[in-house]
Structures are given as structure tokens and as C-alpha cells.
Image 1 (spheres, rainbow, N blue to C red):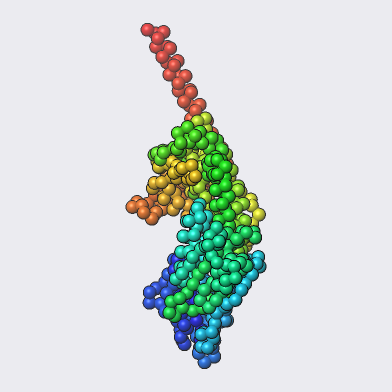
Image 2 (spheres, one colour):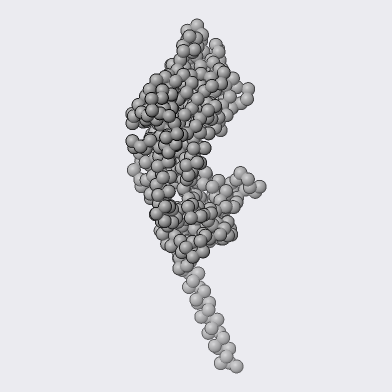
Length: 504
């Protein structure tokens, strides 16, 4: 029996038994195997199963985004083997061949040690789902939210109906001395314990146990846990441990009374002084208010593809290096930073004794592009690229905060429009809106690129591109000449008035 186990970050896993002959794969609802993924074509691929020879082949039907087998893009027919992994967009399909008797007996059980090798193996096996988990866990800042998010992710991605996380502070409530239950053994030995339909996986930071994940399948027809299930829970456990360690560190900082430290995550050091001063004087952060701002979006292109090719750990190093460069550049120009998974939102407001927010935003955008272009490429055949979009206008800005938590926020159509513009600013280009172009056209080379139809906007918007070259001598001369002509005109006017007075 050949079967496909289909997993996607947004839905529970589904197992499909291959039938002899041809089975269509695609986004169309008429497909034999429907793939609900934006990267899938309506008619994406076909699987052929010859029951006589036990041969399984897949054929990519010239799809828009390609079909990958074991991380390699295929062209035309490809013969599949037991254990092969097929990827279409973010949808993963594991091909398995088992006999009818093995289908009943399959599964894993016993004790596993939580080793570094097991963690690395697990991270490598689930790059797509792990990318979504990292993005989600990066947004939480308390243990309760972490537990809720992790349990939901495990239930959805594994199709289990019971998932609980027991914190280390509650281990004492479990009878572990001499008890031979799955949970007791896992707590006592900090080990992974597996039975036919239940599993315990510790959440460990260094050698310190932080919590324990318990999951169970008890519905009729549920299949036993497999090695792939174990790898997925270990990968999630590892990311959860990093998140819980980060939250614990932040809580210690808060307990020490250092309110300023969280501010420095997204506010320039200069502005953090004024914000902190207002908080200490009034007990609250500045209220939400409507202001004229310039916003900048920059995002790394094809983050999913990079993660899959290089692995989550290597991509995390690249992302961290990118953030470490971008944040100080934004701070230097008096901007505010919000990290957005694979990109950054920067907000620039009017500042005393500083250039306008539009010009500062473009200056930052140019530095980011130059940094990316000069950086040593980890994959020379697939260059690391970004897109930058800048727009200016009115937006609602301010802080949500308390003594324990503070977060800068910016809202409005300006943000949505700029984010959509950024998606077209590839590779390594700077797109700006009409209001920004009007302000900076005498300081930078600006070229009209045409209009874009933005989702959520009734009318297309006009977009301009900022050249990365230096300011044109002609434009600079034109500006100088305009100033000179104005001075001459004022001088002639004064001379004419002087003559008129003498004639009188």
C-alpha cells in the first residue's frame, strides 16, 4: 500500500491512499488531491501508480512555482521511492509504502534521549512548518500566550486531540517517585517517552527542564505515532525552549526596574530618553495620535525558499545579521523599528534640527540596499535580495504600554499601501509613493514607474523609483540656478524701486 501524508502549516495532516492509475494534484477542487496553497497551480502535477510493477511516478505539469522532490526541483516525470518528500509551495507530502500488516503495527514506542543530534535532525526535517512556528513564537512575550500558541500548533499540525504543557514549577504536583506513568518517567529522567498513542517530550534550555509537552491520540481510527511525529514535536520543543528562555530574561529585566531596556528594541536611543521621561513623569506612554510620518518597509525576498535550501539555523544567522545592521541605521536617522518576521517596518517623524522624515527614510533605504548588494552572498547562484518601499502621509502612531510591557504601534491605510508596494520593489529597488516623490524629487533622482493596483484600494496608485546613483549634476545645477535667478530677480526689483523713488 502506497500513501501520501499531506501536511500544511494552516491545516491538519491528511493521509491519502494511492489508487492505481493517474491522480491529479492541484488547487482546482476537481483534482484528485486538492492542494489549498497559493503557490499551487490549478493543474499542478500528476502521480502515476502502477500496481503491477509497484512503480510510482510524479509529473510536473509546467506549474508556475514548480514541484520539488527531496528539495530538488523536477522537470517532467520523476520516479518516486519510499520515503520521498514532495513539496508544492508550503505543502509537504510524504510518500510511504507499507504492507497491510505493517499498517496495523507501525509506530514507535519506548524511551529516547533528548540529544543535540536529535534536535538538529528534527529541525532539518521540518523547515517549512518550523519557519511558521518561529514567526509566531517571535511575537509572544508571556508564558501563557506561548503555551496556548504551541498547543494549538501541535494539535493542528499533527492532528492530535489532546495536547498539554506542564510547566516545571508544577512538576512537584505530579507523583514521580516510583511511578511508572509516561509523564512520571519523562519528568524523572528528562527523557522522551513514547507509547502507542501518547508521547511526552521535555522542553529543555541547556540542561534545565522548563516544561513538558504531553500529547495523545485517543480517537477511533487514529494511527500510532511515527518517527516523523517525534521529530516535529522535538523541533517545536526546541523553539519553545528558546522562546521561554527569552521571556524569562525579559521578565528578569522588568523585575530589575529597567523600563528603558525594552524601549531600545524598537526606539532610537535619542527618542527613548524623551519617551522614558514622559513615562516616569506621568506613569504612561504617549497616547495614540494622528501624525505626518514617513514609513519604510523592507523585507527579505523568498524567505521560505532560503530556509528550505539552507536550513532554519543558517537562515536565522542571516536574519540576525540583517537586523543587527538595519536597526542601528534606522536609529541613526531617528527612526522607530518594528521587526516583522522576515522584514522591518521603520517609522520616521518630524524631529527638531533634523532633515524631513521622507529624506531620512530614503537615506536609510539606500544604505540598506547598498549593504545587501555589498554583502558576501551565502548562495552566489541565488543572490540574497530585498525590496524597499517608502510612503508618507498621515498615520495613527503611539504606544500601548504598562510597567511590564510597552509596544509602539502605527496604523492606517498608509501602512497597508506601503507594505503592498514593497512586494514589487525587487530586486534591491526603492519604490516611493507620490507624496514622498513630491518632497524629495529635487534631492534624489526619481523616476515614474507606473501605477499599481493595490489590494484594498479602489484606485491604482502612482509609484516612483529612487535611483541608487548620486544626485544628477544637472538637477543640482538646476536647483542652484533657480536660487540664483531668484536672487537676481529680487535685486532687479529693488533697483527699479530705488529708481522710481529718485524720479519722484
